[in-house]
Length: 362
Image 1: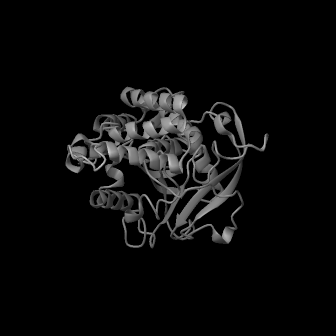
Image 2: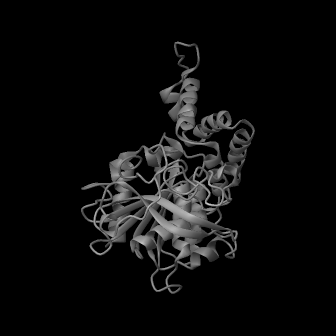
Image 3: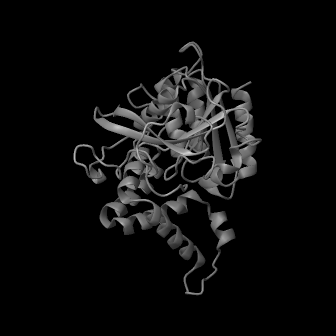
């Protein structure tokens, strides 16, 4: 859903003196990574950006990006809400965002070189899950010496991974903010993803173009498309909505690749925090008071108008958290932007993030 700088950052170990507050996307080697299915991925590198003070000077906030995003949250997709004086005020807190495992922008994924063959992994890249992505996030945090997270926030796939980051180390996260993200990917989202994956599988880049067009119809709302495009027609005779979708599909082809898209969508389909943990409520119980030395708050943010991971799914996550004994609360706002509202409704997001951070560091 979001964009980031094109290309893959080279792998290197970042000097300790430059790890915090650089405001730049930096590469870091984190060694091998044991995956959810037992596979060991060697020589993993991750791209990350850190803004603001380091962990010895201030509380740390971790932001997790959505499907096609990058580590450049503060300079790109959440730039209006991260920085001095903004919702995530980098004069008061450190803010870290790392490109997800399997991603396109600097982290080991299908376009990375396989040490065993010397060639890009391509389709041979292992099937990964949101838990594997969470493990990679912790590898970065460990390498940087960040063992305590005041607030962990993410939207869509980012919210799914945020839940897994907290569940991987109960007691290490003070607050989770899951925005437009469910506890487990629902049937309707699985159906849409199935169609996207089938297109990519059969048609490669052309299929990814079409998959992106299909996905955009789930990211926005009927009202948004009617307001912006209606039945307007372009000079070439195409409906304006068709021209828009064609443009967005080509933009993704220009900056992404089919193997990475397939890897990330498949990981999103596998998302279920209750898998192997006795169900969703049982999983969340690990974050409750008494289960660890430090309980974790849960704030689920639903978007009325979101047809992909709408309010019903987010509220179910919060209800499961409450059942598990967490301080779990639900917040909802209405937007004609649909699912993508967390990337567009800056006034609302500013207020929600500012409030969430204030509670996390109170």
